[in-house]
Image 1 (tube, rainbow, N blue to C red):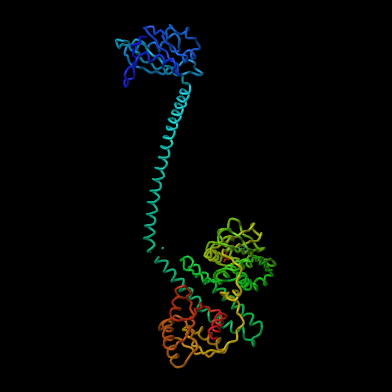
Image 2: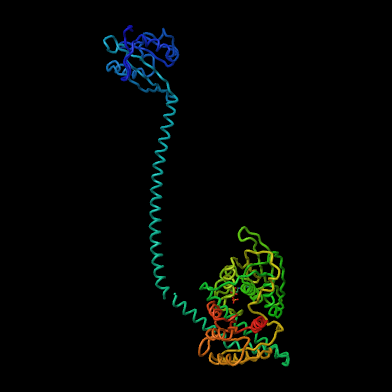
Amino acid sequence: MNADDLIAGSPDHEPIPARRVSPLIEHAPLPMVEVEGTLHLVAVANPAFCRLLQKTREEIIGQPFAALVENGEQCAALLDRVYATGEAETQMMTDDAPAKPSYWLYAMWPSLGADRQPARVVIQLTKSNRFYQDLAAMNEALLISSVRQHELAAESEKSNLLSQGEIAHRTATEGALREVNEKLRKATGVAEKANRAKDDFLAVLSHELRTPLTPVLIAAAALREDSRLPRETREQLSMIERNISLEARLIDDLLDLTKISHGKLLLRLEPCDAHSLIGLAIEIVRDDAREKEITIERQFSAVHSGLTADPARLQQVVWNLLRNAVKFTPRGGTISVRTADESRLEGGGWLRIEVTDSGIGIDPGALEKIFLPFEQGQVTGDHRFGGMGLGLAIARAVVLMHGGQIAAESAGANQGATFVVELPGAVVPTQGVTESAVPFFGPARLIPEKPPLTLLVVEDHLATLKALARLLRNDGHQVVTASSLAEALAAAAAQPFDLVISDLGLPDGTGTEMMEQLRSKYGLRGIALSGYGMEEDFARSTAAGFVTHLIKPVAIADLRRVLSALSR
Ligand code: ADP
């Protein structure tokens, strides 16, 4: 190399004099050589290149470059090109070791002679296995990801198809639903009118069924209390009274069911003690149980027996369960009524009420069915036990309305049955709530001492009017009777009364019209007696000024209790 020779730079750099290049090659950390001539004989080799070939400088200098390195042929061709073009070249080459190939990066650029033509070529080598591994890994990753991409594409195509199917299905379902709703909407104007008609029919029917029961019930109750009658006669009278009450109950069940199915059953919530209500329900079935020599055991273990509930309805639930237990348990059997505290996450404390009997049991397949209206567990056509299959349906509705649960358990035929009622919000009962629990019906109670009242009794059903008047007179009250609105107004104008007891349907007007007038003219208070027991009937009579509304056939005990309360 001449002192004036230049090393060609990259296109961005001016060539530099060769004399400045030799020390640079000598000290470079990477293997570098300079070759000359068409055979590319090594003219300069640095120590790094000698180390790479594991040869001395003497063994290298003067040798054709192609003979010293792997990929000699490729290198020779590349060097020829650099000489021909005068342009720098870089190329990656690999050796042929298949298990662990090495990668060589060759950078070659010409050094120019005084004529500015390539005179020699400087070569720099970089061996990079790491680069290769990275590359291989990258390739592999690329390959895997492209395969995965294909799979994903196939999967997404599949799920696309599925969701398209799903969307189509939903659209079809929504369409069908819309259609059904539309039909229902149209029909409802008609499944609503019919419903109202059914409601009205049931209300009228129950009114008509109750009305004739009232005088019988009142007369039987009054006579049963007459100590001059022989004991057998009084026993027969109490049987008549019991059966009339039962019939009235069936009518009430029908009405309750109508209210439930129209969401019109309202709860009158108040603090009450479940143990007292259960006790009252036990009292009601005690006579029937005694007749069948059935023992009723009670085990009230719950500490939290205080509930905010409708006491009459809750008593009705327990009474239904007890009534069934007595009905479906053969002579000499046992019924146990147990209560226990239950702790659950939701609803605070829960109260568990269990009614277990040793009776005919329930087929496992019927355990759910029996809670449906008009469903009975026994074989179709077996009317041995009577009933309409309404008691449990009503009990379930009432329990659900209290936020609770009810279920039946039985190991099968003749294995007895257990009914479990669970109610939320149970607390330790407050003192005195027991007294507020009013039984919704029950055996006649002792008549409380009370001052006699002057009563105006208005009723167009003459048998009822007579029986009621006789009973009230027997109790010591002064009674004036009227059988129409006009007669009642005339009687009220003629003398003062403490109270008016009136039917609501009168031949020349309504009891509510009459009450409004009597209240505004004379400040009179009244008790409504009606065969109509729907919520709206209660609301109407309260609005007219009646203090209370008793449903026919009126239980004498209830009427006496109300009279006694109002007279104080
Ligand atoms: P009903 O007693 O008027 O038939 P319920 O709704 O009270 O109506 O009861 C429905 C049915 O559940 C009954 O007919 C009877 O098959 C079954 N059942 C209820 N309680 C018992 C019980 N304690 N033991 C056996 N079966 C019962």
